[in-house]
Structure formats: C-alpha cells, structure tokens
Image 1: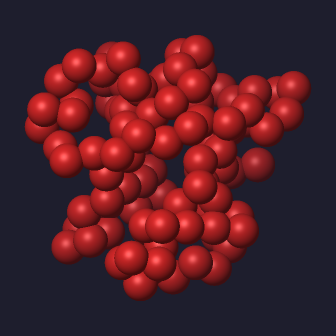
Image 2: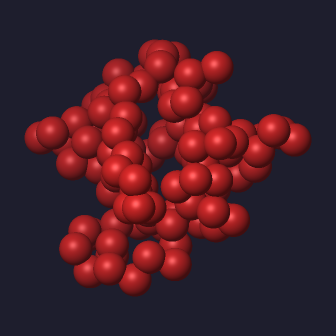
Length: 104
C-alpha cells in the first residue's frame, strides 16, 4: 500500500505514517492551499499550527487493525474543484515535525 492515497474522496494514511506523525490523535488540523495544491495536516494537540494557518479540524478515523487512518476530503475537493480520482498522493514530512504536506 502507498503511504498516502486518495480513495472515494477520502485521504488514506498508512498506520505507520499516521502513528509516526500524529501519535494517538483522533483529530487533525487540516488546511488546503489551492495555489500550491498543498494539503497540510497536523495533530490537534499542536498549539502552533492553528496560529500559523487558518485550519479546520477533522476526525482522523482508524480504518483497520493495522492502524491505517482516513479523513474525508469531500468538502475540500468540491470547494476547490480538485481532481477526486482515486490515486496515490506525493507527500513529505520532516523528522521531528508532526505535520504532513500532501500534494493534491
């Protein structure tokens, strides 16, 4: 499985990546920058992220026993007319930073 993918208008994250980045968080901050096609996610306990970004909160749902997780991207995809076809998504994360940068 790819670490990050778009399926049925949901963002799917591998269990390992989700745990490394968000720990046990059940909610994440989400912000989309259309001009850069950049989706940024950070755990809900990150106090700095919402001061730097106009972010909304999303439920980070556990999908299976492997710890794979997902969030709905339907609103972002519709509001910004983003291609909603199922696909693997390129992403980056820096060691020590609990944030994902995903290219939509």
